Structures are given as structure tokens and as C-alpha cells.
Length: 246
Image (cartoon, rainbow, N blue to C red; front, side, top):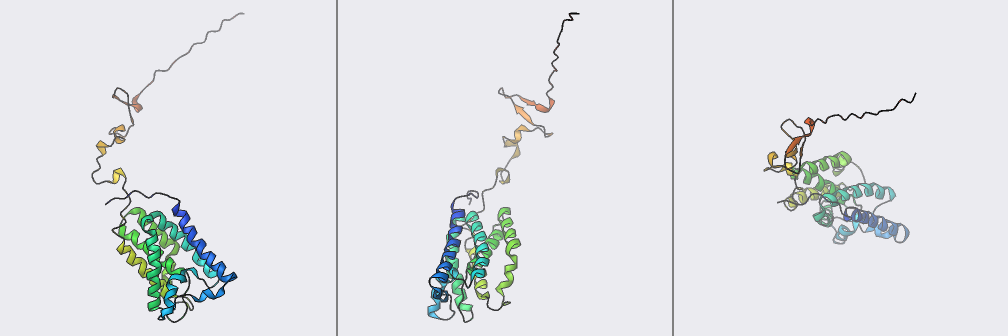
């Protein structure tokens, strides 16, 4: 199965910016109009707490919480929409639902809010999907994600009070699960001609312009190859005669 190579489209930038803008818009509403919406997070083991699965990614405790989530959310969603555009919305929407439900199942009593659960979904999916694809461009993306956000792995453990490590763990598990589920639906990027298994250098029109010594060969209209490196032009000598009037 083959797919077209990675291509840029306006959605690569518009959708991630729209998601981050929506998160900031909800925070503005929370601060300026109705602060009580902050309570609509995930409340584990409570039926009314299931509503928070849908609302918690858009709610944040304060400006620092929002800022710390906005940058990785933007960067990871940009990578998702560029490299996995066809399933990007599935990963985001289903990721919110499944990671939120896992948080509801394993979370401790309290009000779990923030987009970090979704961020861990994106982090986990992009990393493991690149590894499973075994394609150098996607593996490079995985390594870049680890370089930028590898320290996030520690926050799936209860190492900090007041932090929803259960939401992080739920997101990490969800991303890994999606990497398995979508491993066949998203094919590897199209290979270049010279990467194809049936590639024959002798049949490549471009390679025919080089001889066995690596010299470039210019093909004339008559079809006769001439080695440019061996062409020697006869020098032209111009004589200027000036009459002596003395």
C-alpha cells in the first residue's frame, strides 16, 4: 500500500491554531464571565463527572497552566496534521474521549482539568507511530518529539502534588493504542525512485548522463554522446594592426 508524500495544506496551520484559540477563548470566558465552569472537569467514579470527559481539555486552573499546555499542544498538533492529516481529527477527538474515560476510571477523587491529557495522546501517538512505521522521516519525527518533550514521561507517575498524573497516563496509553490501531490505515510516505526495490540504475534517464568514471555526458540532438570533460576548443587569436604614422 502506498500513499502520496507529505504535502503542506492550509489545514496544517489553521486547525492547530483554531484548537489553541478555542482553549484560550474558553479560558477568557472562565475568567471574565463565568468562573464556575472550572468545576466541569473530570470527576472520577461519579456519573456527573463523565461530562468532564468532553469539557476538561478546555478548562485550566490559571494562566500558567494554560500557557504551559498551549505550546506543546500547538507544536504536537502541527506535527499531527502535517504527517497524519487523514486521521488527525480521529486521533484528537477519540483521544479526548478515551483518555478522559481512562482518567475517570483510574483518577483519584477531585476535579481533573487541562489539555495535558490530549497532549500526552499526541506525544505518545506521534512517537510510537513513527517507530512502528519504520520509515526514516517518521522515526526522525519521533526522535524530535522525544528531544523536545521526553521529560514529560516522568509526569505519568505521582511525583507532584496537585497534578493529574492519571490524565497523563491515560493519554499515554491512548496514544500507544492508537499507534497500533492506525498502523495499517496510514501507509508509509511514498519512496523516491532510487528507494524502490526494483530500481535499476542503468534504466534511470538521469544516470545515463554519467559514464563509468562519473563524468557528465551531454546527449546531442543526433543522439551521439559527447564527454564534456574531453571537449577541447581551439583558441581563437585576434591580430590588431595599427599603422605607424610617424
